[in-house]
Length: 153
Image (cartoon, rainbow, N blue to C red; front, side, top):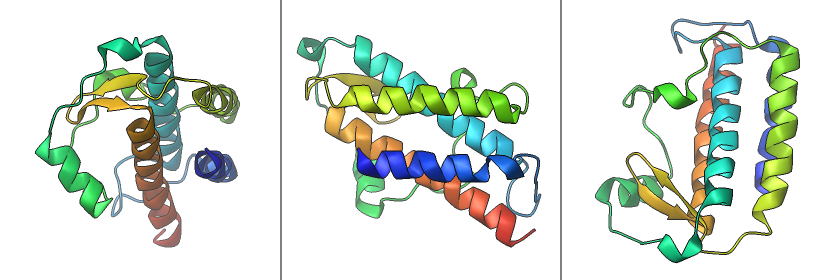
């Protein structure tokens, strides 16, 4: 969980740059990247907390295995589901509120059963350990985009 908390601190450190954009890196501004990351974290935490561990079923998914081996999400290959896509660019205040929700949610993960899970649209059911891996991977992916927007801008 420590790594997730460090990633949340990184998100917080980029809030002052929320309006910055660099079309050569992404069509979305830094605020969108941060907002999307926080929406995903909060959505996943809500889903995993409400799951019934008895219903968890592991199933082989080649795409999940490939991403786990490479530990990298390819850029520009997946369309963001509407449920986790920011509608408008969030304000700094809205991002901070979502950040606090994410911090509380991440802390709650430590109390969950190991077979608590959420269902990813491509990876299938992810138990607690794999969910934490996914949240770190996904958040890192968007923080790298933020870093590229800043350094190439």
